[in-house]
Length: 281
Length: 287
Image 1 (cartoon, rainbow over the protein chains, first blue to last red):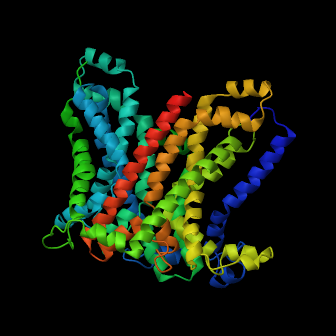
Image 2 (spheres, one colour):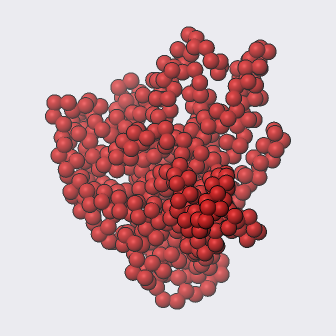
Image 3 (cartoon, each protein chain N blue to C red):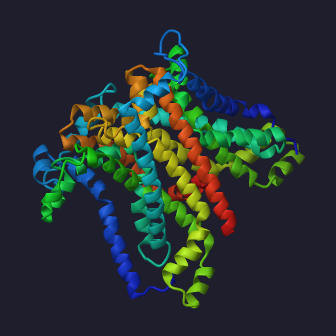
């Protein structure tokens, strides 16, 4: 079955898998085709690509109308701000925490590490009600700062877990050598440790960035009623406005889906490696 | 070597303790109150839980959640292993095919849900395809029929996340290497025997990971339901998450919503631990 020679049976298997993959990608095909059709096309020939007359206007409509944010365009900007802010905070907080937990081997450090692992597995839903109340009292509902704080707190255990595991596997020799040369704790951290953390930082940024970018539950709870919306929240509002105009619904969904898909296709190796390694734990 | 001081970890520890321990404990306390989000909360014992278990909607939501999560775990594991075995070696297009099967994992579940709502809608893609191949009789209102609506949610969940399982299994297969399988092949063992008695036991650690991930994901299902059915028709596709959201943040019943969230949390914690222990033991035996 998994012999390395390429036989006639391998060819047959290859063809079957290609057909399967084509069917699997079908929904993405429908997304692109329908998002460029007119309303009539959608009803009469939803499967045919509108090569003669692509309706780019669908995208303009989705970009500029509907919902509290006033279109997928403003929501796109909001999503970029929230995602960048959250990922930056997460990296700073978690890299420092992971560094401490990995380099200290005391009982306290091990106990803390276990608490972080537990934090990864315990679902966050139960905490949302008290957090909602606290954020309401602090005036953080419907704000960028509130969302960034919330996402950072939400994903800290996962990011700390990844950083600690990575740093534990790093040899201490570089840090020791730097300290022999008279570097202080801070100098060692900035000039020696941080550069070594680049690969895991890329993984953390990718995995948490995707989660924040696509997050819907937190957005609907903590941003509802404000003028800030991330893409999923805005898409939901837009679809409610144009429930039966499938070409517009698809254009909205495409603005949500395609940018992420393009980044993924450009960096597919890193993405798939990050998922395989990061989730393995 | 001088060790980094603990105060560097204080922000991380503060986030962890506040959000993942203090807040859930507070939430658990609300579950035993009649709090409405404003004013004082009164302790009412188990009243919320009594109401939950005597409510038709909540019982449906609980059952739906368990059913979805259970089917999801099985299908994602089976599909993921099958895809990983098919695309592990040999095939020339394997790298491209992996990209296709993995792509849905990275995009918004809500947007994916809307995409599939078109496919399942009355005059949507699925019914048109059925009509084109002469199976009009099978066409139905997938989303409007209580017997089908829940299964559309399952289909969309599996479509989106089976690629994630595939990637984890592929990484595990790389680690195994092929000496054992080739030795067995030389001895004339049939292909299916090699899979069941060599490959699968060696994949046990990966099965643990995929199962844990998908139990958590399955029990928290929300986006797909909102996009496809909104919980309807007549509450037929409500889940614990949709009910936590609606009861708490739409109807303002913070205590009642917290009680549903507490049930969900206990379910996830219990199943995740049972799963880990179960597979650890099997891994130990296999190893």
